[in-house]
Length: 194
Image 1 (cartoon, rainbow, N blue to C red):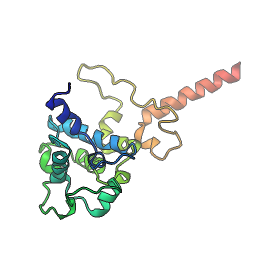
Image 2 (cartoon, one colour):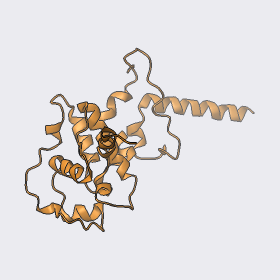
Image 3 (cartoon, helix red, strand yellow):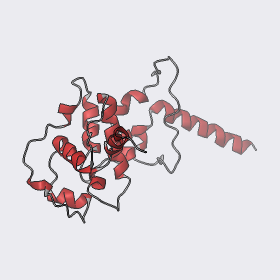
Image 4 (cartoon, one colour):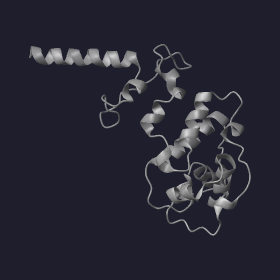
């Protein structure tokens, strides 16, 4: 049996289109969830902590703002909720008001791009990885707190990130790209020797 705490945690990362009953959705729901997780890492607690789907939607509105009719249509074209969310009147507190004061600007910008009502306006995974928020991970000298090197973070398969993608050079640091080029040259040289 699921506890109340577990159900609140599960609700805290649900995209608004799911809360509005949408049954046909894309991986943009995962992008919303990733944004919620990043916000929780920064805060130490979930920023949207509803006890049911209605309360969860209200908590999202308190921070993100009131969705327009167009945004509602994008989230769920079949939404026929008895409550017209567009008539609620108050000024949202904004994400900045729910994050610690020391939060980097790059984190705030990333969250604003992940936590959008319209699913098709949320960043893709690749575009999110290109965010300045992750620039520290691209430094050659960065180490874990235990002084060990980071695990391989940029070993993308072709179906994950094409080397010809315009984002590839933004996501994969120079020292990795140069090393991969060198390794590719070595492999080609081995093949020609055979």
